[in-house]
Amino acid sequence: MRGFAPLLVTLSTFAALLGCDGSNTLAPQNAPDGQAEMARPSTGVAQVTRLPALKGAHGEALAIDEAGTVAAGFSWDRSGRMHPAKWSMNNGSWALTTLPYPASATSAIARAVNDVGELSGNDFSVSSGSSPLLWSPTGGITVLGCDDQGEVSAISAEAQIAVGQTRDGKAAAWQPGQCREDLPPLVIGGFARAMAINGDGTIIGGGATQEGSQGLVPVRWTRVSGAWHVEQLDSRPGSAGGANSIGDLVGHVTVACAAQDGCSHAFIWYADGSSRELGTLGGEWSVAKDINATREVVGITVSNGTGTPFLWSESLGMIALPVARNHGADARGISDVAGGTRVVVGAGGRPFDALLWTVTNP
Image (cartoon, rainbow, N blue to C red; front, side, top):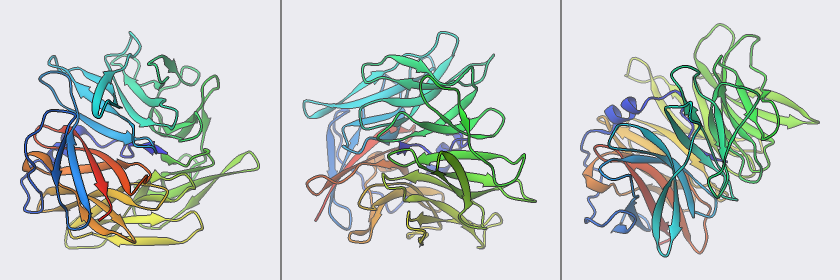
């Protein structure tokens, strides 16, 4: 369920996108790492927390479990090396733990977390590419697959099923002790990328190339009678990059606009086959990144080059989340709601800091 979708978007792209000041952001008071800074969005109350990072460095939070107690991402060190990161709630504040990775790798990233505290991601190696990884709650590491090369985007909340893309452009699923399972593309020989997975691992969202085009369109894979079936969700360019337990998917589609390459609109594809376009949510374009069990959606809306993280739901409407340091930011993952509160993770600032928002009902 919980995972960071944009597999091939570089950190420099995000930095360029989110590096400008914006009139929609709220500047909270300074607070130590791991402790909350409070601001009030248009609906409800949100506390933004700058999550701890390695000394003198920064990081990004990419996913959070359904309970809102464990987050996954990465943190840079002073030497410029990226470390897979796990943030855990400890005595009322958030604590950072960096995770191990194979000695043959130069760095690694954690992109996803399930509901028993297992994290998944991949390493990076100059000589051998990337290997899919699974970390136990205590930090033990398992290399997934059978000498596979690929990058992980998400892991199912209730099972040890990680999904992503292989080095040669196939959508794939990995489980401990098994070789990878390739998911069917829309066209033979086409590229595909798995970006999200539901709770029990039977519905996967992502993107795939269609006949006559190199661009991705949003797709859904459904497991029926032990076999995977692929379904194209829209004819427009886009992808499905987040999922909740029952298999509702969120992402974006690209629509015609004044911009040369079009504008993306946040989108929901419900498990029952219906869908909903959320539009730009107050910006020039938007992307939905994750959805929880009560169908609350988080993501980013961008205007004049500045990203504003948002939370949207049928009941709460659009909430622009407050941003530390008065710079743009991006919301990547959301927990389920407990006692009227949900936890959102992402990144923002200059350079990027891992951020966490606690949003309570009004």
